[in-house]
Length: 325
Image (cartoon, rainbow, N blue to C red; front, side, top):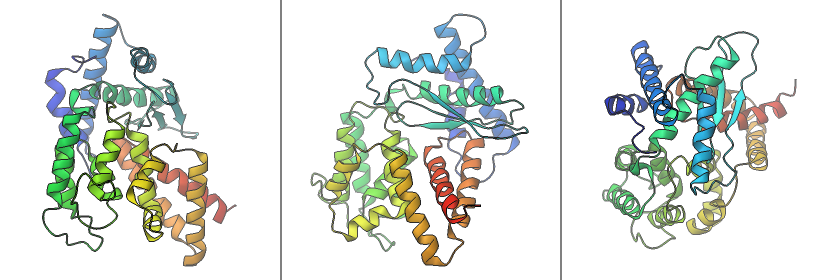
């Protein structure tokens, strides 16, 4: 599966996929469309030889091929689509890949079918990129990630929780080439320094423990676990566990085998309902508006969406309970 990525588009795609803020301008959108089309066409050429590719079928076949070649997929190779209800264009569609990664239609789509194809295109492009060796969690990858994480704690943090400055977290992200892994490190490191990398009760030790438990996986296949810890951090659950004196190892070991399912979403929604009552009202609506804007910006930029989409879905559950009408 390596060799499907056109050399000419590599630098432009990497550059564009790093967009982190603000609305994507017209030029960036054009670059994204060209890059996606180039990868999809390249995949079609390698897999079918000629003719126009049916990108929805190609995406499903890609993951079935991975499963047939021995990739362990907890929930099978099924690719799941979710169309956002709407009576008028532009229509929006999300696609969730085996392993938990989520992408959405990144263009203004006049039909629901076109929205599905748009989502499948960006998902297929990321699936193909995911086959690059740099995206696989290997012994060398783990050593580099842990070494860079330790380096990020070399200087005292200016933040109150001891996690490290945003610049330090970003430095980790550059080395490991996938920004959400740096976010996970920030989530796991409840407090204290990054010393004693072999001790699973330290932040760095827990980071290493989690990576070693997922050795052999690619970053897309690691996505659901990353999203679980991001949600626990966002929801305040990690802070609550720290206050109950739970060790990092206990938390990582427990949630490493926990599926991101309706039960987890419902529990987090109840936490937000409780916050709504404690604050006197308005907090859920405010957080939901922020989550919707974050998701929309990320979708149009062609970024991975699992975390912002889960936040929105959880807050919508909470909103339905605090504002039943």
